[in-house]
Amino acid sequence: MGPGKAEYLRQLTATLPMFSMEVGREMEGSTPPSIFIGAWNYPAVDAGPMMAPVHGDTRVMDTPEEWIPGRKTQEEIIGYRMGLVRGKRRVRVNDRDSRYASLLREIALSEGSVESEAAFAHIPQGCSFSEDHAPFGPSAPVERFEIGNVRWNRDLERAFHDTDLSATGAMVDLHRRGIPFSSIQKALSAGALGTGPHRRLVPTRWSITACDSALGDHLLGRVRQHPLLDTVRVHEFSSLHNTYAVILLPTSWQYEWMEAFLHVMGREELLFADHEGFRRKKEYSSVGGCFYSCRMAVLEALAREGRQAGAIILREAYQGYVPLGVFNVRENVRQAMLRPGQEFEDLEAALAALAPRLALPVDRFLSESTLLADLHRGTGQRTLGDFIGRAG
Image (cartoon, rainbow, N blue to C red; front, side, top):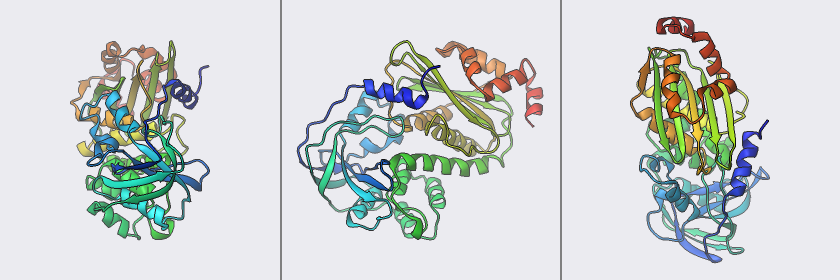
């Protein structure tokens, strides 16, 4: 048996070349806007801004919604992220009204980049890669931090001042208004959303999954009210050394996420999977935050179309892949769902059509799956009408 996904990714990130952008103990520049809240030692966490040592509009460095549609290469994205210097200071998560926490909130709610200056306890060093969050460059404790004038985003400002609105309600409303996911997540992380007494700083990694999960649950409630898709449909997309295939089925909501890492470090062929049935998954997924990012992206598309479907997602990561955070899954699946799908009479036909475009044999996916394998055994060579009848 191979390593679990978390251990495998730890091994993978340990092989990546680590380097530090050269900056001094004092720095002036612009934050995209961007903040990072660590999870270690919660509820006393390391929180701070992420700044670029350049002035002007740096928003592209922390707006992942623009990277895939903008055809940014993996090297360009890593370049953006390695150009961000993380300042950090130990704060308690419920100390959201301190001057330092207030500065972080100003950044998180900003409409655009914010001029900043910082003095660090020592020269920032290192970098961080993770499947959970986007990478960033060197970091150091911050001794002094100041920002220039800030203009808040009006929708984020409205949510901040509504202290009777739950965090989930705020996230749903902001999403409905078209606020980018990354902006909603940063506002939650900065303690700017939720009912007054319950607001607190939220570690970045947790806030990403919280947003994906909350938005996904809300969208699922809408999707369940829609009529079933009337055919099997496949949407595909490839970028950043990944291929995604979204198989939609004419059933009530059920969902399986399967991801294969193929020869990324050597000769390994590792497959990880998790699923949920009609009712949402209660325990945290064994495959981590990407389970919720993909789920949200598919449900977002189904709600937009006004349809309900089951969803099987196959992902393959190839040599050259670097963990860039769960945005990689969310935005690639979003792109897949924006492209026209190919329709099939049944699941067998869909899998047969996908097989030549996948590096891993379909049988390997079937052998490691739960939902896909059950549906495959249940449908066999039945007609589409039989399949829909079974699903109902």
